Structure formats: C-alpha cells, structure tokens
Image 1 (spheres, rainbow, N blue to C red):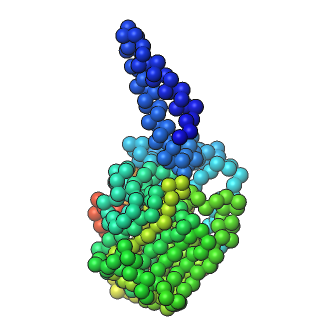
Image 2: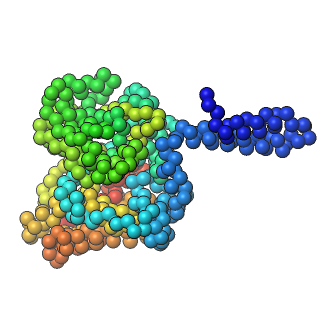
Image 3: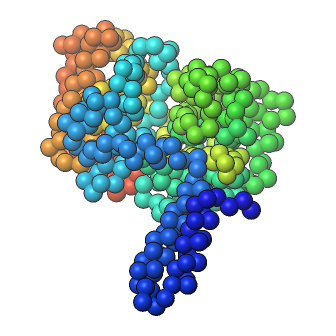
Length: 439
C-alpha cells in the first residue's frame, strides 16, 4: 500500500514518542494523543471524499438562526452562503436552507409563472401519508422509519441536513400507513447514480429482493443516461435521454454529488415523472402497483455514493372546489415559500393557477386565504411570517392570477391552529399549509 507523507510523518512522530524518556512522558503523551486524533480525522475524511467540497463550503458559511432574518439578509446581500440553524445551533435540513449566494451577481430564481415554471404542472396531494428528512436519526445507523432489505446504507450529515447514503447497492422500503391511493404524489431529493435508481410500489408481503415488479408493474427509473417510467416485458414506457437536461443544469460539471428534486404524480393509470422543472415521463397507461410500501433500489459506489432524503408521499383527495363547497375550506400543500420568507417559490405555479382558475370559474365565490406554520421557532415570528405568506398568495392571485382583489382577504395564524400534533414529521408538514376558506 502506498503511504502518504502525512502518515509517514506521524508514524515517525509516534515511534519517537514511544522511545522518549520517562521524564518527557507527559509531553509525548499529549503529542501522541494529538497525532492519533489527526490520523482518525484523516481516515474519516478519506471515506467521505465525495462530500468534502460541500462540507468545506458549509464550514465557511455564515451561520444564522432561522428566525434572524436580518442576519440572513445581510449575508445574502454580501454574496455569502448562509447556513440556517435552530436556536441550539443545529443546522436545519437542506430543504429548509436558503439558496446559495456565492455569486453576488447571479440572477435570482424565477418567480411563480415565469420561465420554465410557467408550463410546470405538478400539484402535490393535500393529505400527507409519509414525511421524513432524517433529522431525528443517528448518524451511522440505518433509518428507523425505513425498512432495510439488502445492501449497504446509513444516515450521514451532509449539505446542512441528514441523508441516507448508499455506499454500495441497497434495497429498502418506505412503509406507508395505508395502501397508496389512486391519486398520489411522491417527492424526494437525490444525487443521481450513474448506475441507476428504481422505485416501485408493492404490498408488504411482496418479494422486493427478487424485484417482483419485473413481472408487469411500471417502475420509476433514474440514471446517468435514461430517466422515465418503464413497464417490463416490452410494456408501455416513457423515457428520455437525460444528458441534455443535465448539461442544461450543470454545464460541464458531472452529475456526481449534484442534488436533484424528483417528483412523481399518479392518478389512476396516469403516471408522470418530473426532474427539477421538467416533466420527463408521461405515461397514460401505467401499471404502478398500489400497496402499503414503496421500494427503492439504488445502485451506487463508494466513490460516488447516492444521497437520498427529504421524502414526502401525499394522497390526493377531493377536488378543490368540491372540498370548499362540502367543508367550507381546503388546505393545500402546493404553495411553497423560501426558508423563513414570504417569497413564493416557482414550483408553486400549478397550485396557484389552479386556485385562480377555480375562482374565475365560480365568480360568486369569495375566499379568505389563511397562512399557517408549525410550532418550530418563536411564536411572534411565526405569526408575522404566516401573515406575510397569506398576503403574498393574495397578491399573486389578484395581480398574475386575474382574480378581483375584492373577492380575496388574507390572515395569518402562525402555529395557533394545528391540524395535527407537531411531534411527528408528518404532523409538522401538515401544519405548514395555506388554507382557502369560503366567505
């Protein structure tokens, strides 16, 4: 084995320490302990080389408590990367981190309804079945809320959050509290493996290791060169060569280590797959198996491990107008905001347009737009934040949505009206919502 200079130097140092006279024992013991610590740090770093750059960036970032908007804005205006933390200083998950601001002159992300997002049509289901960002999982363990089947996977800290790292091939299942309904959505983030990633539905007593879906059921495929929806045995499929998409996003950079947003939308036999702001799979006659689990098969390597996280599985329910007429209100998970901000994210476009179309189709309907948060953070700050978010939705609908402003009102409630307990990821996600209330 080839020895690197730092190992040789430390080896000499340790040998010298071992031969030192007793009078110098305490001094050499300190040096020896320090040397041992350095070796352990180097060995640990060598096993995580894929993550080095991200960790270096995070180490040099400005750290701001999530409620300290002045700190966040000051750092962003200075072109610095920000890592937002909770009050104890623990970084929040990657999905809750603000966009990188290393280049002060870089253009901001588009607003809803602009650019490629204008034709984006993904709308998440409003009822949350499963939500996990691994915040409460111990590093080095396999996640307790996933079911291990085969291979090698563990929780790691990376990119400001916690992720499942697949160092080699792995198969695991996402358990659901009920059978996946006819209308559903799945969302997650992943660093795409060159050798492929697959997801399929199945019953709890299925044969995931034998990959029983190979019989007749449609599965989701992601990889270096082909992305889409596939039905085995020459069944219907909808896939594309994804390399032009990767080049559009990354330029000359490799996909290795780049975090992609993946979304799947099912409605009966209709299945759609989205990567970032593009729909890349569109299959009207899919046979995606509805069961009480989702199976994942990731083919990875130690040099370029798959990072997988921020998983949401939602059920679609009663259409918006019907729900408002039946229940007097409708809660949506489809309007998203920047971290600790009332700026609406561009992927909210389809939900906002759906609301605008409904209101224009029913001219006698007036609504109150309610903003709600979970109980994380300061109550007064959450109240202000929810007020601003509800008002931002009203502004979009009245300006870009073409809805008469006199039919709209807005109010924030902070964390005062939870629909679920805040002690689970699903509960907190359900409480972070916008509601439309009939007036």
